[in-house]
Length: 514
Image 1 (cartoon, rainbow, N blue to C red):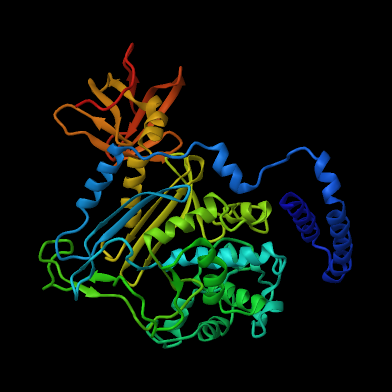
Image 2 (image 1 turned 45 degrees about the vertical axis):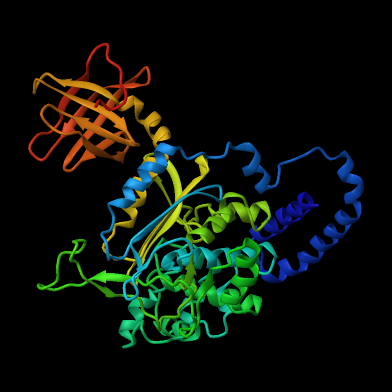
């Protein structure tokens, strides 16, 4: 039955893609309804002779990919990594690894609440900040799946008080950050308001709609703005009739089993096990951030009740269930809509946008990944999925002095070490420079590539794309790939340019030497 449903949705999306005038489209929709009626009547007969086609997306993930396994060595390395992130009496950090929605590892360090000296542990409820956009985007996807919303729907036709200066903005522009709406955080300051003011969604929307002009023509380019997801929240509410927090609870969190997650729209809400966000104190008399005597100030704003662009409170355990929305189609969306969740948007000119439904899209060490970072009210988070490998990592922190992206990438190196080291193999080995009369050796360990030189400790390099690696201001460009190994490289530094190195004859790359 679901195969037939997907076919009908394909017809629906084809019809939407015609971009015919709205009146013509309404005239054609009854035809589609008639086709659907015939298909339902004929389905029991046709299905007997129908060959098995493309499996449901959830089955595709469960049966075609070997489940990711986290080794004991990787778990120990993650524990060691976390141990260095906080000192006694300070706010902390949580890290988790998911294998297609299965919680493979979770670790906690530091305090959730400095007032009461409560440690971070399982069940700790973090403010999710920018990660909240995924909930808003998936709520829109559910409405698209049900035929109640379309990407090319105009915001002006859905929202009664939508301004005339933004009448060309469509739902897809909001989702992909191409609408050109000014960011509401900046607009609030201009309007002489404060994010600490207990505003409602309609108050935030009033701030946005009185901006007076777009930053650019809708669809022309990508420009991140929280206002897009504020407006998207308003669209969901107008189309569905329920508030977005209630919609999320009933249509997303409850079906997924996310018992400790909510979109908070009421500053008076008691949230059990709530984590408080902190920032280091500033000023000449303040100890250095991260020191044993470092002091922190509360950065969490209890009166902040915006949702759509933010508003989500969640736990590590609940996020494992959320991960299944993308990895296993846990909400059972039809295939076309499910694939839209992590597919790049496009500009009106046809260019790719590095953003999907609440997900940033990029490449890291030549691995495709998707996710989002977040920084607000003393919280620093990062979440990245590696779809080709069936693994995701989550970093949640309630201290503003942690580099969440760097820490998550270090965790990714540990978790994906085998894959990364296999990819690094062509670069590894000993290279000699006749000009300098010296040998540089490149090796790999723990998912990182290292440069080893005489009388120096191994130094980790970072990949810069297109066979380039960096070490501070040094740039190594590898060339001459033969028999799956690079045969030469050039080194550029501030003082020396294009110093040539050649692979030593007869040697092979390998793991890092002790």
